[in-house]
Length: 430
Image 1 (cartoon, rainbow, N blue to C red):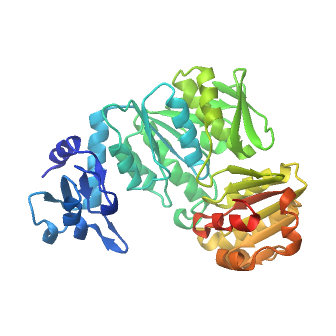
Image 2: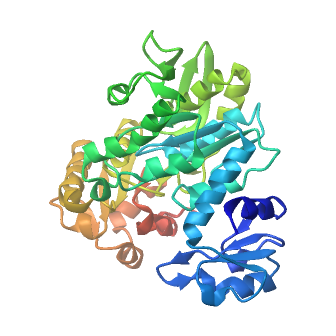
Image 3: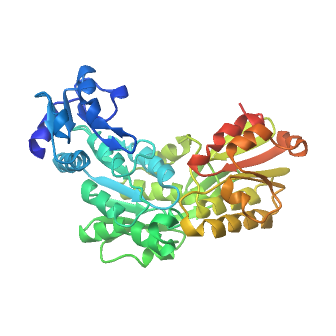
């Protein structure tokens, strides 16, 4: 069965399922494989639970007319997504970057949904599986798609662009993320710039932050829509942090967001630029940005009497960690506590980058620093250290630190694998 025939079945289905625990009735089940499972073995179960068809890539599992055999299940999913994207023929916005991708995507979606029926990447499903699933979640009612693209190796963004065929693109920044896979910061810049190169080659449009000189060097001859502090920007932005929330101003419109930290100001500005590019009223842009409430441990602000908790433990790399520490240092708090967890995927740079962050935290004169994880344990520091989140949970904070919590501003920042949200009960946060 060719991809056009599969797409015809897809259009007559309720969508795509990849997990038999969450089968949608009349869906197409794609038997994806993982390190510890073979989706082919679940094909019959998927049909029993209501799937219309199951698609497998191992002949021994193609035992009924409802099970379609293909050569490569992942490649077929990606080809189906590409076919569906071309079938819909709607504008696609793509974004990538080292930090702030998911927050910026949510903000752009909030703004553009004021005018269009949008579908955006759910959570951070932004890889070689997540991007196809996002495209396949779009229907004939969808007027505009917003696709987040993540990568940890060169060539991945290019591959995702070939599937999604974006018309508009934005890179949040180039930072010290996934250094192990990209082979250093220059590798990060090259890898993330694959989005721009795709758009240049396909005469797409770039949304460009004029305050970021690295991005400007990567541009060719293509249409851009610019924002920034400079007079040359098509959307001139003023940044004014009103502690603890990020505020911006554009065209006499002031946005008072629910996002903490100065590092979120450019994310707000990018979303405002997309709104302006798509000719959305400034009042609607303001309403969209001010109504967005962060969740999932991203830039969340939790207040408890006199205590302020900055929960930013969804992900971390040296660039985002530095930005979060700088933000904490500028807050006017009686007592500042930074709880920092290990940063992953740094490869040979891990030791130096963890030492840099430990040193930086001390330079900012934060009242108390707590470092969690095996990488931070190897650093030279004067902080309170725990080898793991589990040890932190078992040991707890020293009494003298615990006594300061009622009036503290606390930053929690670490890579997802550290699961630092588990320590909330130690901080008397419910």
